[in-house]
Image (tube, rainbow, N blue to C red; front, side):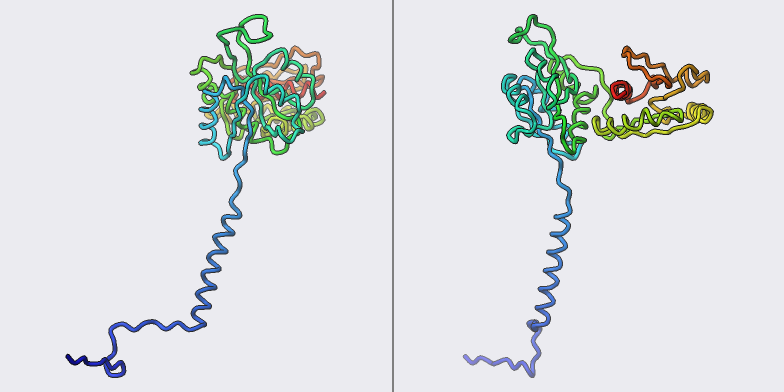
Length: 313
């Protein structure tokens, strides 16, 4: 059998293999390298999610796990929970947040005689009750079997505490964390509804700057709440409040008002939407009277701010 050769010069093939020169290969390599650098730079700029480390009493694991997972789906952060007995939590708290082994952002433990000693320490701040637990049997060192509050604690000096305080508000919110506590038989607390970035709006008579400015700055740091304050003359405030009260959306109204003491606001908006804040404290503001918006979504936060101002005097 005779095979006929193929003459490339006379017969052009249907497919000619490409010829890559050194310049082409160099340009291709540079293009690939630039693409890799662009992807790497984008990955490097991706923000890291904040991590909240919580030390939790082991008996509230069921509701807390559901709350933790729900918050992670709603907020861009990671909540790491460590469940321990009451005595183990007490050991960690008494070591203090300066201990490197106990780097907790938040601690939840049942109130007892031993936890009362933490109130006298400066290492931890008491953030109030989260829920109330009814034990089937009396707890150790307790006189009677009454509902015991689950107390929240945060380190006194901690940087970037806003994510922790936001999660704590989620725990306390009636439509968020309190639902899970109630489903497990816990007794709930009264708190503000959940707002991811709460903003407390205040109108104050001109002259209240010396009283409020430092308290506002400290409260923002302490509670992680944004404060929006407007200082107005009495006549201008009355005019502004009259206009805002006519709007369909009452959320434009400020949550808190500081009026001149001894001169009650006689306008219709005052009686319809605000009530005078009566304090049991002996530290009363001498020149200004606070008024709370009755249906403020941040009513509890506003009350807490008023108490904060009294303590700051």
